[in-house]
Length: 172
Image 1 (cartoon, one colour):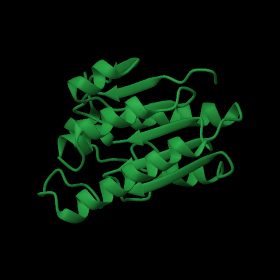
Image 2 (image 1 turned 135 degrees about the horizontal axis):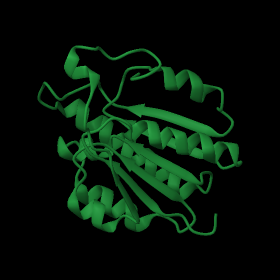
Image 3 (image 1 turned 180 degrees about the vertical axis):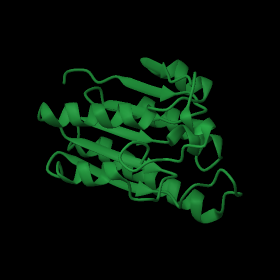
Image 4 (image 1 turned 180 degrees about the horizontal axis):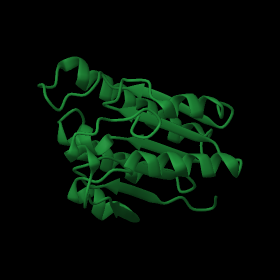
């Protein structure tokens, strides 16, 4: 790629990570190298099994201690997020990757695991050829302003409200 852009997928609707992973598969199919860091998430999901089939093209690392929406963030949560941020910095400066995805980084900012300034600095330091994707609810206004593309996933209707639990292969 001659020029990489910065994309943000945010909003309260389903599909932010799914969109980013779809882009990762498209990039891998085109011969590009992909690095994915998952903030917050600790659980192994169905997408991990799929992405393992592309291990020559896609590297996925998790730096979460699990869902923390219903508990207070611990120092270990912040440390894990900062380790993930350091890995992203290494990935974008290594020259090894064309697409770098920061999954749930917006939530990590919202929960004060990392700062919006951390993301803004990373965005500013991104080499020109790298495509950078940042996902998660609660995207910071400054992060959205600095991005080249912002997509908001808006929930209109969700079967979860009828008591349907997350399903393997669909939600995780």
